[in-house]
Image 1 (cartoon, rainbow, N blue to C red):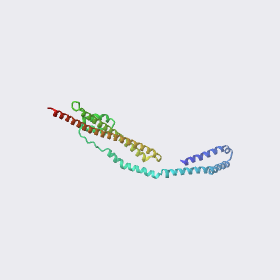
Image 2: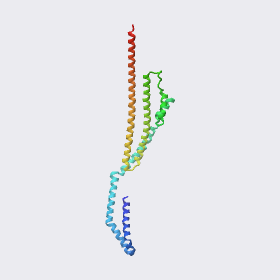
Image 3: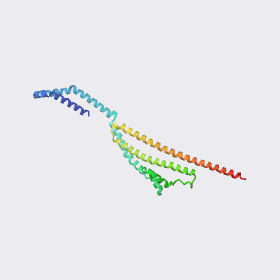
Image 4: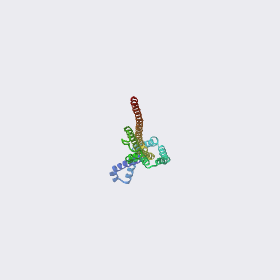
Amino acid sequence: MVKRLLSKKYLAYLAVVVVLMLPTAANAGVGDIVQLLLSITNTLKGDIGQVLGAIQKVGNAKQSLQQQIAWPINAINQAKTLVSQVRAQYSGLAGQIHSIEVSSANLANPKQLESQVRGGKPPGLGQLQPAFLKVYGVVPSATDASATDRNLIDIDDAMAMGSLKTTVISDQATEQMLRAADSLERQSAGTAPGAAPLLTAQAQVANLQGQAFLQRMLAAELRQEAARLAHDNALVKRSAEANRNLRDHMRQILSRP
């Protein structure tokens, strides 16, 4: 690049000098023209040549600094080769792990629910509620269960449904993160040295997104654990209330003459 610029500058200087000398050259003989060209050549080889040579030295020093110290070509090529080898070695295995069939339900309704939960597709959220009710049933009516039991059943179903929906959304996010990671791997195997900070920034953003989804799943797990503890406490409270009612009935029986 620097050599091309120097050549263009050299030709520009030559063209300017020749244009300035055209009137003289038009009235001169062949010998005078030759002498004129020799004078131009000597001038370019003199001060102007030294300046152009110094510029070329600076350009060569800058190029050497970039290729040997800032962005060593050998180290960059080794890193690219390593990335390509790792992708060739592990991409196929990762794809096989991702495609392993883990569904185990056999009956129609449980199989449908498992498919909706593991599918990781946005339309699956709307179809999740009916599939859930087919497996776990609806809340009993007021004539079939006490108010306490109906409340516990309803809140347990709600928490379970919320956790299942969060799981489906998490699977969708996982697919996006895997595609982003694959894209970063491909770019790192063939990108220019100066683009490394941009790839690093993209990787940091993807990492933050992954951490955010992880925190969301942790929050869902904590909510589920809190609901389980509340359910157990409700059973203990109901047992205490039943014991109190039993004591009241026993007092009434014993107080009769």
